[in-house]
Structures are given as structure tokens and as C-alpha cells.
Image 1 (cartoon, one colour):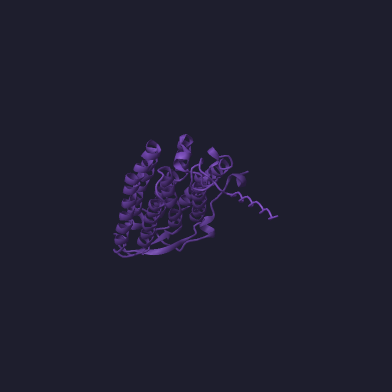
Image 2 (cartoon, helix red, strand yellow):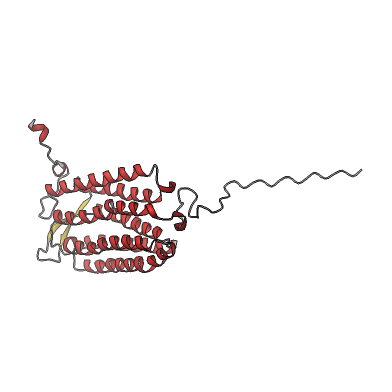
Length: 287
């Protein structure tokens, strides 16, 4: 009976880390396994809902399913103590101390953040140019933070500043440009809820990075707790909020018919099979 009840987390024993001070602990790995379970559960839920979506439109379910699945995979890698590098920290009182840097979370963000921008753009009926602009800004943000985490000298803060500026431009654009389009299609109230929710969470990412892989103030396990809470609120919980709000949207006004006819109104003309022209009448032979 004791063997059944005892379930040890052996991830750190199987995938061991060199003896360094700043590394993932067993409790940290346990928390990451919890995140894997949360992401996986919500992925299965959203995927199941995609079989019978409202108005037979699945674009929200597809995008959220991708973000949830990638999140589950990256958190599985983190919990298994895989996907990391040892980087010497040289900007704090503990200068020269090596730290375990996990690059999996940046892979998660490089997928999740653009998907959130696409979702906001669809709700606001934004132009594709605006949506692509927000996607690239989110990539600049994430990649700059990744480079900053791997830079051992004080120059890491330069990359941090570039990434944070990209985030601020992206956030301002989602509020200013997004609200204009949302007002036009009648989703302004819900758009402000979503944009405010996601941007409030995004605001905490620079803080979390600054005290963890930036300033090396908190350890690896506390930093995963900080980012894990933010990520769970961002994608799994954000998926619930978005799908609940989407039940009252006019998909025709939003032109949300990707999985049926493309980005055109439902009442539009769809010449999938143009009728063949009638043959010309045969000429009557002269008598």
C-alpha cells in the first residue's frame, strides 16, 4: 500500500542538472507538472467544443487549441528538466554564479503571444496589416528577452529595453487601433474586457523577467511559479473568457467565416462552382 501511495517525482534524477546553486527544485518540477495538467485539460476541452461550435465557426477554437497544446508541450519539457542552458550571471551581487536558463518558455511565448494578438484582431475586425504588425512586435519582444537571458554582462539590459519598448508599442496599438474597429462592429465592450485582461497580464511579464533571468533576484523555482501563474491566466483562463464572450457576437459583422468560406460575410456570394454558359443555338442551314 505504501508503494502505491508513494509517487516520487523522478524527473530531476533522470534528467539531472550539474551541481549549481540556481537550478530547478523538486517542488518547482511538481508545480510545472501541475501546469502541464492544466494546459492539457483545457486543450481537450477546447478541442471537444470545436466539434460543434457556435455558427459552425471554429477559428477561435483552432487558435486556442494550438496555444494550449504548445503550452502543454513546453511545460512538459520544463517539468522534465529538459530544454535548458547554464548561463553565468554577471550583473548582481552574486556575480559569476551560474543559473539554469530554460528556453522552453520562450518557445511557448513566441506562439502564445501572437495568437492572443490574432484573437484580439479578429474581435476588433482589425486589418490584416495591423494584426501582422502586432504579431511581429510580440516576436521582437520575446526574442529580445531570450537574448537578454543568455547575455551574462550588463548589456542584457539593452535587449530588455528593446523588448519592453516593442511590448509597449504593441499594447498601445491594441488599445488605440483595436478599439476603433471594435466600435465599428459592435464588440467594443467585450474587446475592452479582453484587451484590458491580456494587457494587464502582459504588463507583469517585464517585471517577472526583471527579477528573475534579468536581475537574478529570485531563483529558478520562484521564477517558474511567477511565470506559470501568468501563463495559466493568459491562455487557459483567457480561453474561457473569450469563448464565453463570443457567444453573443455577430459573426457576420466580424466576417468570421474562416472555416466555412474564408474571411467574407456569410451572406456574401460564393461562386464555388460557376455555372457553365449555355451553348449557343446551332445556326439554321440556308435552304
